[in-house]
Image (cartoon, rainbow over all chains, first blue to last red; front, side):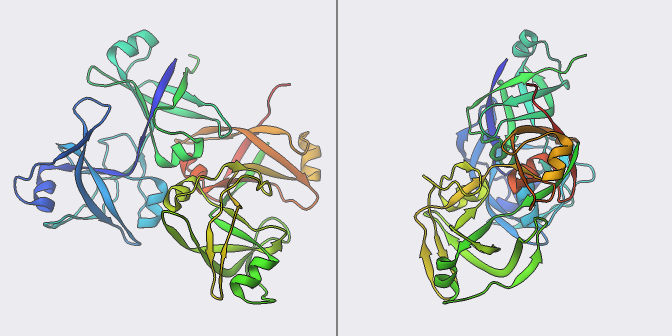
Length: 191
Length: 191
């Protein structure tokens, strides 16, 4: 079973409240580019994130707004910022570090929300049926080539709102020599 | 068979001529820290490397001087600099890109020498005998934990001058959640 790769550069999802604080009351994000997951988009807007050791400018906001603000960075970025985020599935923000976010109209001091996103595969329900995986299953992903690797413990996420894609961050993509749209092979753990 | 991990941050090896050009005729590097491979050291001296798209400051020089100047960066770094180095074993510099190097006393415009270092294991001759590997063999390396991976096609390098160590760059270490001194398991390909 082959799946295309989508590489997540560092980005941020904002709550309605934090978007207001950073860009002004009632601000609406402007779509730069639709993402492969239906309804999700990269916005034209960017922010600066600041940690104890350094800052990173031009961090892209992904829309639409979410219930909680979440900052997804690579481990490389975490050293530059001086924060120690855990590897987490999206939305699981208990016991994660914060950073300061700077927008054009204000700043937000996050108490939590910074994660290293756990690599995962989005399966549309029909893909999942065809390939015999259930939501929250763990699979392995094999990458060929001179930097060939097998990624273990890859989370399967299944929804009618998903398009088939293997999501990794830039460290993982670079370690394996991957670029967007490359195809990788899904392997199964024996039961 | 378990092997400790050594993570290579970006660094540069200089030829005698290039050291002269950057730091002045007859300059001798000052040892900051001995490395685990016998006779190799991190020097106190650093340089700036400049590509078409950006520059990276404070790139550490590793000594002693070598026959040819070689710049080892991560793929993450390569995007920041705007160069496209291949994955290469150390010393194989044909058809690699160059960068500009800036030192305190001068600059050098390299015509070649920038690589993404191919991950490899240093085996002392006695380790190699014990574990049944030969120089230039390929093995696999298994990393456990939540970012567990298997690295394929890992080059074995055997010498009486080597200390047992698995060398990866920062992208590979970050993708696998590794830190210096962590232990990984070497697996063998079936013949």
